[in-house]
Image (cartoon, rainbow, N blue to C red; front, side):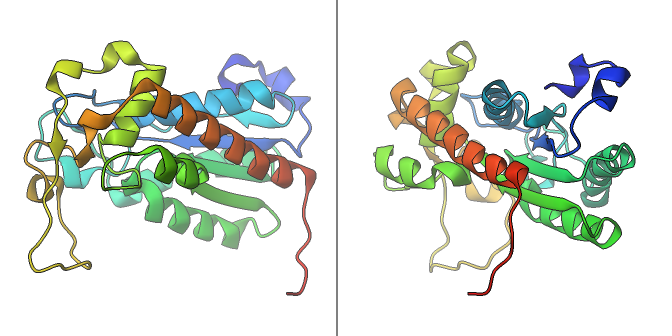
Length: 247
């Protein structure tokens, strides 16, 4: 079920065990070869496919497209919400639907800058809605094993406008990939320091991070299917209900 397509009476008639699915993305630079809306396009595609396969168990909310992207603002066209502003939007979505007696919420993230803020927002919401089921995870986290298996470059995880993201876009939105501009990009500190907080103009030459030249639509299809199937397993468990047992 798609919230934006329903009437208020149709929403009112829904089973309140339905899991509210909230995709979160961004509008930010993705190097010279992918569009600004890449994160939102990808997470929306995963969320829409989940809803298509679980239409009676999921209520899909429109994607929160303005993400926490301050680390990309050196690149023209990027937009960002403030940290508190982003979290407030997410909390208002959950609060509003909680008033309509929904109690199960899953935030499906498509942008790394949102990760910690999604966690903070849901932890704050848990204080108010103690009996609600609140969960969040990045769509790509459901496909980590597949990503590590299919990627050919030295990086075996999703990064930014990289082999994995470009592959997904080649599968889902091939017309939006500037194939003639694909580049491998990314800078690392010497000596190695893993604890730095850096912006993307500091760690890239042209805004990408990874090995985009190795991307293929076939890899993207495998990653997409793995992400969808993994998320569906999680959402079906939340819908069915769970108990907490001793270890």
